[in-house]
Length: 275
Image 1 (cartoon, rainbow, N blue to C red):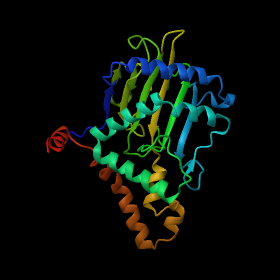
Image 2: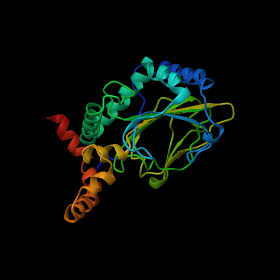
Image 3: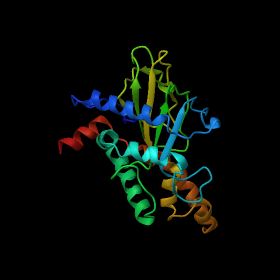
Image 4: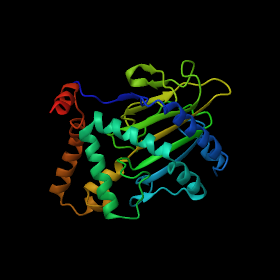
């Protein structure tokens, strides 16, 4: 019905953005050799490249929200995300989210406030961020296979930013399979997309080139945890009567449509910003 569900955000207009992008790529390449990654983790369902997750997660075996266990890679990730260029990139991506999908953005912000107020041990990656977690794909050749990020909120959004040193006219294109779209995706560009349901990948780059990427997202499990009064689904359901369980199942079936109505049409955005 005309609702905006993905945004090709391009690059910020700042004259120094190319310098900022180059600085991030240099930092990633310098830190990549300091990572401790098991061989088994170098090949995964998204492709054959090094990926490190940092932030607040819930799902895949956790019984409650926790900070991702970075083990030996904590110092590397802390140093990278403390850099001004990564903070600037995160703020840019947050601004895209806030401007284009303000109602959903507000839901994400509210979630983070509730999570961190309830458990101060949970540490966001960036001050004031709406996203619970980030993954930095160190490559050095980040060529992702077609996939969805099924742990993310089903009707939610994530940001993907390409980084590195490659010719975007010859490779590294973003492929949105369900939309039959192939898009030039240069270093420093960002897309906002519903990665839990929209299959996406990127094309190969040229020999000798380097491509990395930076993503921000929130798992659906975190939203369920807060909605259930800071309890797991199993504990929440165990405390319900048969009638209450039936009502909960009915509400669960409606959440997708409710989520879709958090997206805006162009006309709604025009009216909102004209007010």
